Image (cartoon, rainbow, N blue to C red; front, side, top):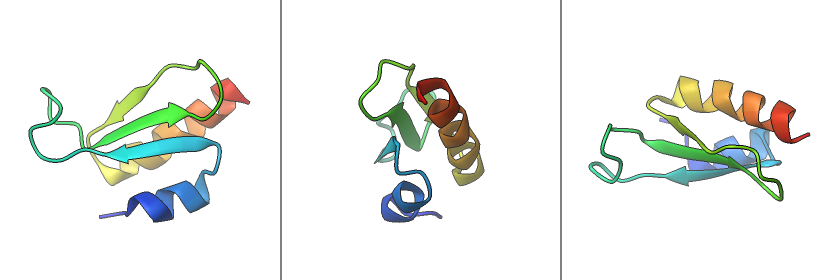
Length: 62
C-alpha cells in the first residue's frame, strides 16, 4: 500500500487523505483533492486509482 507521503511526493499539487476502514460509506481508502483550487474531490478505492486520479486532478486544476 502506498503511503500518503509517497503519493504526495509524486503529485505535489494534489492533497491525499488516507481514510480508515469504514470512514467512507462506499469503502474508499483515499480522498484526493487539488491544493489551492476548486477542482472536484475524487475518492479512490485502490492505490492504483489514487495514482490515476491524482494525474486527472492535477490536469484539471493546472
